[in-house]
Length: 243
Image (cartoon, rainbow, N blue to C red; front, top):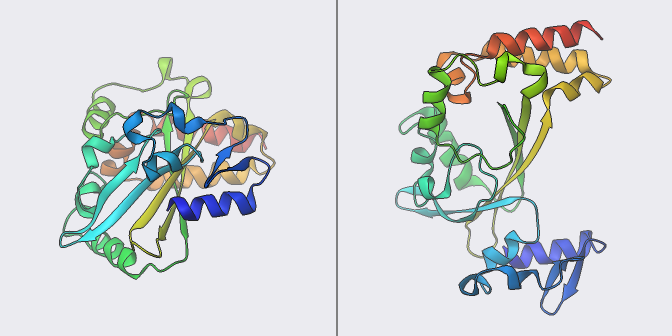
């Protein structure tokens, strides 16, 4: 994985990443690997994690299926590496409504992982949070409990002032030698109110409203939106109406 990343950065991003010996470094951060603890300075995954903004997770196949074998996680979205480490996919996705062990979606994900070849695949995931922190390690159990036991995650119910949309860009690629799968996660975080400045705000607000209204109770609890969906729908409705 590190070899592929170094080759890509050197070829596609020569301005931001410069050759240094056998590897590359971000421009302006020479000697960055020296900042790692001594035990990790030669660890390929640790070195790779300093080169890009993505979190890096390696999935490995064994008799239980695809399990989380290694990772560098700096910006979790309501999970922790300790919580998921070593678990197979069906256990990792157990808190996700409809994706637990024995479900059809869980089997489809395993089959997709098995059939993945050298090509990279991409997907996006979204959530709403009440602050601008990239680091959100709160576990699913804690998050659902908080969401169902308080009236709103936003102070004074003010969506305009406190709502942030968090989007994960995720990619999957099967590595050519080890046949492990590299799972990358890049976080994009913006105030929800910025949608009002978008030229297509009416279309975006209507589409987002449709997604919110389609969530069932389990999905609302999982995303922590049980108490706030109506506030968000009303906010997006006003935004669409102002177009």
